[in-house]
Length: 318
Ligand SMILES: NC(=O)c1ccc[n+]([C@@H]2O[C@H](COP(=O)([O-])OP(=O)(O)OC[C@H]3O[C@@H](n4cnc5c(N)ncnc54)[C@H](O)[C@@H]3O)[C@@H](O)[C@H]2O)c1
Image (cartoon, rainbow, N blue to C red; front, top):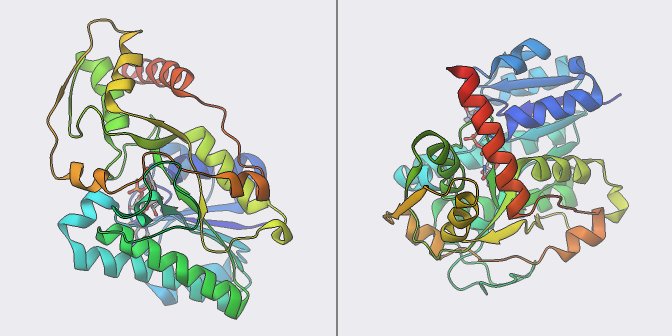
């Protein structure tokens, strides 16, 4: 019987991951924690507790007391927010990871998921079809912390037998919870502004190609990796995950097919420089081979789905 702890359950990924895990493993076997109050459907469908991942003793107590067998650690300061508070972001991101690695080492919760990001790559990385193993010189504090985190994860696997598993998420697109301050947030905001105002001011330039993934695909693949046979995992750092690559202009064109009056103005800000250092497309063939990464959404059905769901969400609120 698995007993699962999700740290960072109130965020963009956690708020959807917890519900999916509860559907698979049973509501009372999935413990949701965060320093922020979660959406009602999380706190009402199973256990929720305020828990700070930076508080090592409390975290270890929680894991031992609740006989946790696996942990998903989603707590982090994201890319564009981290650039505003670099030293603090480094401290938070690294301590959040190290505490869960140590807890995994010391307790029965040996299986640990921790997400990395395409931010581990940098301007000197080949931009197209970026390979799994390549030049990695990230120039953001977020990317540096993710790259260091990948190395620590592999180290704890090799040295202490922690069952560390990770993917390098591309930008994630969802409608349930607001994104948490990343450079790919435009690809969520654009849908809300299209439905509300038929207008969007984009903080990236129109031809910035970035890899993205619809949340349903991200959650499905995350759980697939966690359920994979450990013998089949050839990588214990973090797997490339490609998703779909497009530019803001291409996304706007697809939205316009539903909303012909929709318009976008491009006003790149400090986030443009971050995006310029990231890959345009990714090679994820190793994840496909090792644990069967799949994706169901292309740009067209992702746009159909997002517009329909946001329309429903905003209309039920009124
Ligand atoms: N969303 C994306 O597009 C994306 C892309 C690549 C990687 N990731 C990674 O996935 C993970 C989750 O991302 P997200 O988009 O859900 O982020 P988010 O900011 O929406 O959610 C993170 C959650 O962690 C919580 N948290 C922060 N500090 C904490 C602490 N000390 N103790 C407990 N909880 C704490 C926050 O309150 C928040 O609810 C992060 O590691 C992020 O770097 C996300």
